Structures are given as structure tokens and as C-alpha cells.
Length: 302
Image (cartoon, rainbow, N blue to C red; front, side, top):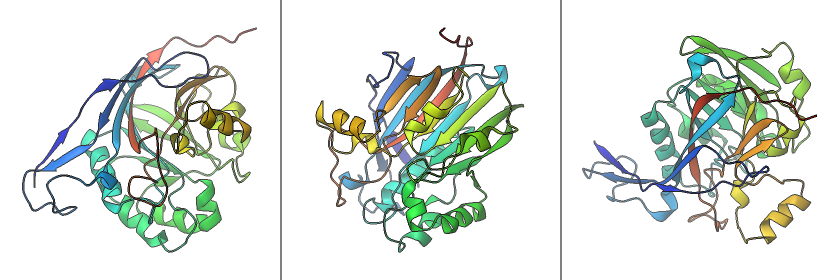
């Protein structure tokens, strides 16, 4: 089977806390079309609307990045919500899209289920086969349903689950520290434990399901945090959605932010909406790809 991936690129501005923007961001709609009728995921030639998601390309300039990691490629999946909220085909297409991009690192940033334990066995089935070093953190829904089960399932796949832990992985001939902070929504985050014994310089990438965790990171440390949780606002009404999220303690809704001398990216999430029981408006399910570029060190503001 051969697949053709048609991408429609357009520039969009990401929301940011400091009026700074990612240096380059390309956004594309996923329109996979089978060249034969033997597509194992869908017999129709074109995907149904409920199976669609965006493939978003970003370039991030990271202070302190190891020189060998200039050009490092990272893929992020978040808020997959296996079950009736998300099409199985969408999830498997997302896995295929990640593998097709051949990233150096793959990050999963939480909420693999919603409320019911019934989809738990399908999480491992649907997210199996990611090619490359895979690092995962857990979200609030994962803890509400069955976090130990999910951790064990990912570890059986060879994925690394981090709960207030870090790992140093050698990629492109140099070490990169991946720091995984547990879920802040359920009060399980421990930044101090996560950073204990971790490198204090070089490439350091943080995974945390909830975006406000970025405020607890060491300031002006050249860190990049990858998060999810918000689904990009889920149902966006300009002005109202932002105000409601701020009142709920979630000022970072989607896209790229600069916070206390570090960077944050909030993924819009792959799950919920487009044919499921939860409506989406003004935000699309996404798979995010990042190319990291070296940048000068950030100076603290007195």
C-alpha cells in the first residue's frame, strides 16, 4: 500500500505570553489518500472528517542547546483520550504520521483515557509501534482511571514513563536530558524531585501534562516544556474562552509561550471532537513536530 500525504501549508500566529512568537510555524491539514483500495485503516479513499487532524511544524530556538542537537527533531502527541471521544483511525494515522517524519525523540504528554476504564487495553494497542525513543508522562484523567496500568502498558512497549523523574538519552552523538513532571492537576507534580541529579546545562526538555507547571521551573534556565491538557480551548469563543481558562488557573491555552525565561508549547491534543460526543470549535486535533535550533543564552531580568 502506498499513501500520499497532501499538506496545505499556511502561516499562523501562536498565542504567547510575551508577544514573542515561534521563529517559524507551518500548519497543515492531514489528508491521507490511499492509492489502492487495500487501506487497512479505512476502505474509503479519503478519510472521514472525524479521522482528520492537523500536522503542525514548528521551529524553536533553544538557549543552551547542545551544538550537536541543532536541527534535532521532536514529535509530540497529547490528550489522545482513547474511547468514544476519539476515532481509532485518527490515532493510528497519527502514529503513522509520526513514524513517517522519523523524529529523533517522541513525546507523549498525558490523558490517554477519559473517565471509563474500558478503553485501557486499547491504549497500548493503538499507540504501539512508535519508532524512536519514546518518553511519556501521565495526565489527570490517567490518574483518575488507572495510572499504574497505563505505565505498565507503555513500559511493555519499550516506552519510558517519567513520574517526577528524568532520563539522559544519547541522540545525535550527544546527551539530552528529558525531564518528566507528573500531573499538576491532581497535585502529583514534584519539580524538585524531577530535577534532582539532572544535568544543569545542555539540552534539557521538560514534559508536563498541565501547562502552568512551567511557572515552577527554574527561571531563565533555557528550558522547553511540552504540555497539553487544554485541548486548545476545546470550544473557542474569542475573549470568553481565554477569560474562563484564566479564572480556572490555566492562562496558557495553546501554542507557544515565553514564561520566566523558559519556553512552553501547549499542544491542542489529538482527542475529542470531530464526530465524538465532545464538540470542538476554533481548535483542531494536532500532531506537533519541532525542529530545535541553538540560540544565545537567556539573561535574567533584574
